[in-house]
Length: 264
Image (cartoon, rainbow, N blue to C red; front, side, top):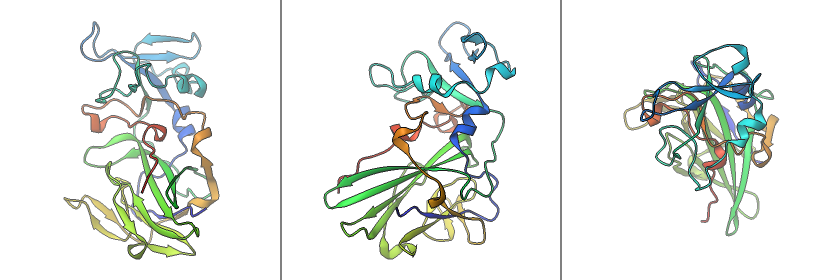
């Protein structure tokens, strides 16, 4: 399966999280935007009345909205998404999940937190894309919700040839010679709080904002791998996290809309 081993930073505060738990502990909100009457007064979905209520109430009836309803808010008919502030967002009923504060996740994720596998092919190679969710990203442009991915490239003999490691929206490729591999498993290092992935400990990024180190929890993701294509929240096209002042501080889109079919 080639599920990666992820080395978390010893000073990490915001750990991986099951996205279903994130949904259960969030309110589901309709962002009304800034160019309408009552601008800024978002609506919350009321699980008792099955209506959108214009308020900021934190009553329990606004939490734990059924996943099938959230999943029904998929792409608009014209293909645009429902993520507020997104350059490709639609004009109406754009939505977001809003938990309280900064979800800390599970400090010992092995066998406790799932990763989600999407597989594609290109020529004689296969690409195994593992998606990981964190409840909070503590970068300079911090935000709730954080989807990251590690994509393993394997050849026709099922041997690892390299990996694409997500870092702030990019996916640089690292050949096998630059990776740490244990028993045909790629070992990656997760930067403290920003959750960018790198092949080695150290200081990374253009301004040195990403810190990776040995000595933290070693997450064996093979213990709980699930198929991305069958997740009950797969088609949800809104934001995983509250609406920030900027697009980069607003919760991200989910992985179904960010996955890629590699052709190399």
